[in-house]
Structure formats: structure tokens, C-alpha cells
Image (spheres, helix red, strand yellow):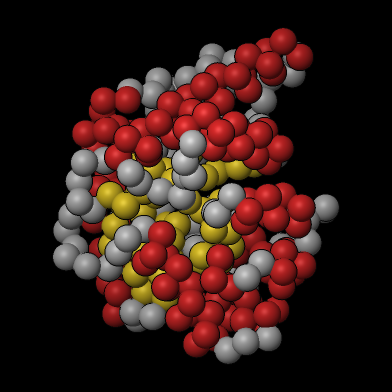
Length: 282
């Protein structure tokens, strides 16, 4: 069995064949969590999960790129949205809390920091970062209130994310549980996340060459019992596949990790599935 801990079958990329993609996954003993990026996709993730007694769950949250800041131009992703819309979203605590009340919701996410698209002036950049941090901390409060783990999104912002998480741990005198999704940091940063008790998520991005990031070193050093596997579909399709990603392709991520850690595919499948079930209480 394999567990895709980060899928987006709730996105428009699957509007024509979503049920068939899920059936392929379940028929091949692949379980999955559909992860929200805004209220619309979070709601759809819950609705999809409610159609399945087992094997499909949901996470709800507001991704930082969809946050209302009025400081950057929203990039419309046709793979994500169901219909054309460019409106940024203000985080509504009560609406997300009600949505997360479903028994099919196993995490708050994906939430975090993203500095990839950012304002050009120093002052606007400061405001942009502060807004992201503010809303991120409110969503962490929601996770604590509901006793749910967090699926963290972080792009070009690991130092700031680590700083916030350390401050939160001191302030609230408790350890949040969660996973650093699609980890693209350095080994030193991975060490800090591990010390705080978080899992590290890997997907098809490990097949890419990104300057300054040594995926092979990170995978070899991170203990297998602290790794989760994911697809982030429809994005980051792992080799040898091309085109639109899907949960069935999680096996290629598992095979690559097994190769790098010099263990069997079966061992990676077993341990990462146990990790997922433990974190998300499934």
C-alpha cells in the first residue's frame, strides 16, 4: 500500500475524469489526501472525500498565493480553478472552522509562506511578508483549536517559517504536528524541522535539478520514519512519466527514495504509509 499525502484532485485539471483517477488509485491500493488551496478548493476536497468510505481524505486551508494583499497580481492557474476568477481571498476563520468540522478533514493545509511572486519595492515587500505571516499564524491557531496537524507550504521562505514555528512553540508551550510539504530547503533547515518533530514530504520535484538544493543528500540523511511521500498532482510529475500527474504515480517517488536510501521499495511503502496514518490519525 502507498499513501499520497498531498494531491489536488479537487482542482479543475480533473474536472472531466476525477472519479476515474481516484478509482485507478484505490484499485492499486493507493490512498490519498486532497489538499485545499483556498475556500473553493478546500470545500471541493471535503465534498469529494465524503463520497468515499475509505481511502480518500481532505485538508482545508488558504494557500499564501491566494491571500488578499493587494500587493501582487494574482496569477491565474487554469489547472487549479474551476472557472475564471482572479479575486484574492480574505481568510474567514469561522467558515474554515466549519468546513474542517467534517470527519473527513485530517489536516489544516496547505498553509504557510511563499515569496516566489512578490512586490518589487522594499516597503511593499515588507507589508506583503507581514500579511502572509499574520494569516499563517491565524491558521495555526485554527489547527491548534481543532487539534489537527498542519500541511506546510514553503517556497523561498524557510528561514522565516522556521522563525515563526520556533516562536509559536515557545509562546504556546506545545509542539504543532505536521509535514513540510515538497521540501526544497537545505539539510540544515531539514535538521531544524526534524528537531521540532515535523515530517518531511517529497514528491516528483526530487527528479529535478534545482540550484542549491541537494535532494539526494536530504533523502539519504532524513530518517525514513520521518518521510512522507506525495504527488502534488497535477504538478511535479515524476520520471519516467510526463504530462499530468496523478496519485497512481506515487510509486515512482517511493522507488526513487528506496534507491537513494538503499532499502526495498516495500520498506519505503510500509514505513511512509505508517508515517502518514500516524500523523493524520487514519
